[in-house]
Amino acid sequence: MSLVPRSIDEWLVREILKFIGPAPIQLIFQNGEPIAPPGVSPVATLMIPDRRTLWGLVLDPEVAFGEAYTDGRIHVDGDLVALLEAAYGAAAEAPACLYSRLADKWTNFRQSNTLSASRHNIHRHYDLGNDFYKLWLDPQLVYTCAYFPTPSATLEDAQIAKMDYVCRKLRLQPGETVVETGCGWGALSLHMARHYGVSVKAYNISHQQIVFARERARQEGLSKQVEFIEEDYRHATGKFDVFVSVGMLEHIGVANYQGLGRIIHRLIGDSGRGFLHFIGRNYPTQLSRWIRKHIFPGACPPSLDQAAEIFEPSNFSVLDVENLRLHYAKTLEHWLDRFEHSRDHVSAMYDPSFVRAWRLYLAGSVAAFRGGTLQLFQILFCGSRCEPVFWTRAPLYTEEPSAAEATKWITATS
Image 1 (cartoon, rainbow, N blue to C red):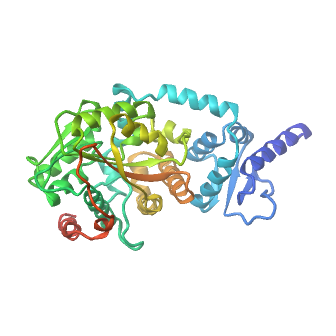
Image 2 (image 1 turned 120 degrees about the horizontal axis):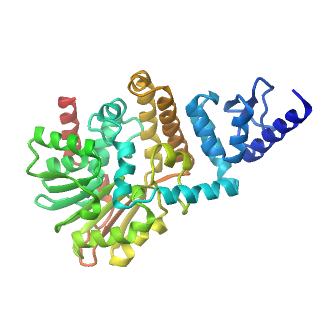
Image 3 (image 1 turned 180 degrees about the horizontal axis):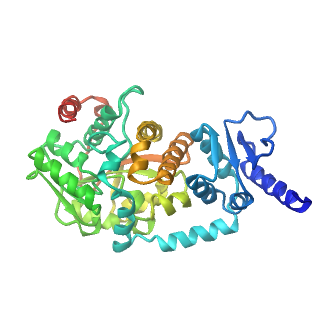
């Protein structure tokens, strides 16, 4: 190797080390000597094969790393989650370069959340195939943060506990009417109807999810109590006692929040109550561009301040705010473990690069929730003429019989 290329390579490696700061990550370029920040014990080694990949990591670290890892050009030796957690901590301290800022703006422009764009964005993620999600989710296909009453609870029990927790927060009563937007594969809607005696109208724009949910309702004799509608939340109609949305808010775009607030007010008026469960941020910032490009187009987890735009114009009262960040980290640990056990099946369904992309997405999500880059907020709210939902928070921690009944139901049907 000539002197000039060697000096370029050394400069590029130094730039990467500057970016990761004191993070305990070791670099190996081509077949050279390992390089790490001074005084650290590396949690993993990042093996970089060529100068093209090296340049990419300097110019646009996050996207270049994700794409090189997916392509198999970068190899990680060691704990991938620990490496990503360390990298996220370092990235939070480093200012974004001009290229990254411009690329973020371009991605936001291309991934709007209009009616047609939202359907496209959701299709790219949620319509990958129910058989794929069955490999690593629980039997009810609940694809949102679980609630672990104890750290040793199973994923199945924790998802049932989450659904009961939502229902207890809302103090659902038999005979009430509920509208759910972004209902996934229908587990929560069916749970509310089966165990709390409510009638539910549920909206979703993922075709495969709606087909699955309707079939479950038919099999369980709940079709008259739960109606699944393949339509955008913006087209929801009717008058309801309760509004529920679990895992949708991060997909609709901050620019649409005031419009969402008006829709909720139209649905539940001043006397209804509502619940939002969503991935969020401590302060407004963009979600990983690699994830928006390859996994979740159009996604934008909001800060609490941004979410307030939903409530304030309609004079909704916020009654309770809770952060279940560590519960989502544990949920994702279960998903990642199950995904890894199913990787051969996933590879046969798609290809090895798909496996690496989703491994990176799940591992990166574990790291983000562990380290606090992402949060999981639950907000209970109500209209200005709504009766108090509860006097103290004590009822939230009183186990309802529906949890035990649901566990028996899952065991019987799985």
